[in-house]
Image (cartoon, rainbow, N blue to C red):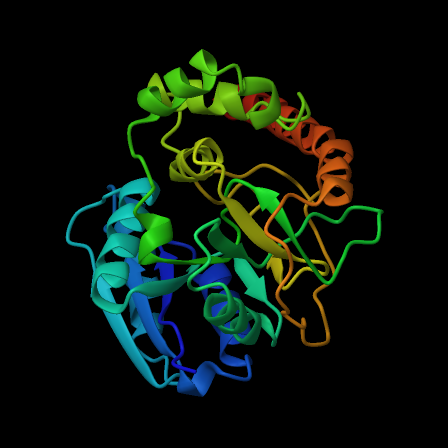
Length: 300
């Protein structure tokens, strides 16, 4: 099995980046994998110092088959850095495993990704593979499908990325015209439609909601593990899209996820578990915004 290249997207968070890389280095297939790191350029001021510190650390990484550091001369922003970086690697290799700098992986993450990429390579209904699963109370299958796509440690092929539409307004119009916004919002459990609308109006620059919408509208599916292989550490407010607190915290799988061929259709039990869990995600973000406004008020 030819291993997929791993793309890591970084900016100015040295501690997060180090933890992400150190966990990735412990993956059983790390030494056989090619790692490409896309380091976004600094915005201004103190960011340059922090970006330079991250880049100095990245230059010393050695635990992979090869390490290629791409240093952006300008600040592209998270969305453009990821969209252009994924397109570049997909164009050269035909598939990709994607991580951001605040994702801690299980030692079995890279194995799972490559197993699933290989097994479902020619399955047109599968848009991507995902490594994170919400800490739901329900017991889930070893692997299962959910309609759409996701962003916390994922992988895809050229045919999957080809369906990505960067035009958020086009996606929003299609969702509204076809009456699918309620389903897109997981039956009203999470305001993804509002997130997409905010993107079209410049209030966020989320690539992830556009990736989700692109796959959802094409009725494509993403494979998830029943136990999470990714732990998100960016909920502390340090990143571009954060403020979740510890609601997304998971215990990483300590064993290999067995990837076997299953029918490509949405797992109803897993979807219901997501619908029950997702309303919990909105509350910490609201509280985080309130705390941030209070902090700004008293520090002014």
